Structure formats: structure tokens, C-alpha cells
Length: 266
Image (cartoon, rainbow, N blue to C red):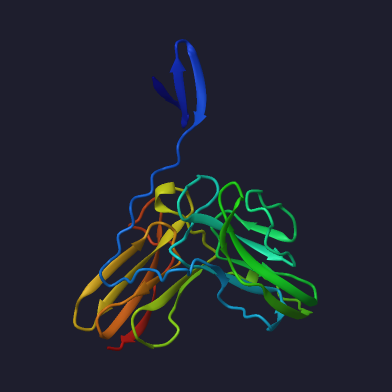
């Protein structure tokens, strides 16, 4: 028979007790709202949202990440399977040759195991190659990564890095007029993103409300830690409202909501 001892499953055979790690919490099957479009095939990627290859910057610089292909962020403290992981920033490093080996911890492999979507770069002046890579709770890489980005740091100024991080969320749509399907990206600054099923303290997930000018409303709850979605509502004018809700209390928002207007073309 089985006993649960402090979150550990204990298999009792006769008088002996064999301990095994409790299974990861089950992730419910994903159901799309009719106004959502399936994620385009072959788009699983970790990427930079505010920096392009060839650009020059000064540091400190707040670097922001995105994640596509239906993948979601999950802190390492409560393991999950499926399409989940956490970001890593590779500095002047190629992708690993062995994807079955854990990523190291050093200044060239920067881990974001709490579900972060950004970091403050403090690199000295020089030319660097940056790359994002997603990995699981054991730091084993997924085949979800960015193209290499080459950036030049022209100057390291006197800005206090702490002043660059202001708790809040943002909602990004490339143009105010869109033909469906179109991508909507989310960002959380100074906050940690997680699957709701992990029930991790001090984490949240995104919730998007799409309201048409005609009065129809659709609510989309991204409980699997997703940081973007694709929409394909009927033609018309819409207001998009993004919230970031507490994973322990989904009725409580951790920061103020943001909105944007979109016109969907026929």
C-alpha cells in the first residue's frame, strides 16, 4: 500500500518502506477559446523582445525575454512535465552539444529558475553573442532556443541597475490593425510566472480579456505559464485587457491591468 509522508510517496512492502518522489502535479488538457488561433507549427522558440542582432546598447540594460510555441514558464521548485521550463541566457556560448547534460552555473550560463522574464545586463564594453535557451527543472535543455544575437556594449554608465526594474506588466501587439491570426505578447517585470497547478507562492499567470465594441467578451486564462497567444476573432474593434493574477488566489491581481485597442480586419 501507499502512504504520503510530507509530500513523499511511501510504498509499504511488508514492513519495509520504499520512498519515491511524489509525482508532478497533473496539467489539465489545454482548451482554446474560439477566438484563439492554434499556435503556428514550428514556432517553439525562446527569444528576445527588446533587442535585435547588430544593435548597440549601454549597460546596465534591462533585457526582456519571450517564449512561443505554446510553451509556458515553470519555476524549478515544483517540477512539471509537458511544455514547461525556465529561461537561460547564454553569453558567448554556443548551444550545448549534449542536450542530455545539465547546463552549468556560471557567468556564461545565467539561470532564471523562478520564472523570470527579464534580467539587467551589466556587461563591460565590448561585443557579445547572446542566446536564450529553455530547460527543465533539472536544467536539461529543451529544443527551444533563440537564434544568436550579436550586440555591442558601447559604455557602462552609472545607472543603478535596481532602478530599471519596475513591477508591472505590458501587452504587445505589433500594429493597431491586424489581420487574423495575429500574435499578442505578454511581459512581466519584477514578477515571476508559473503554472497555476504548481501553487507556488509569489508567482502568477496572465489572464487576457478580449472585448468587442459590439459587446461580446472572451476571457482567456493562461494557467500554464504561457507568455503569448495568437488571436483570430471576427472582424471589428476590440479592447484587450491583460491582468497578472496570483496563483494562490486567482481572484487577486498582483499588479495593475493594462489595455490596448486593436482593429481586426476582414
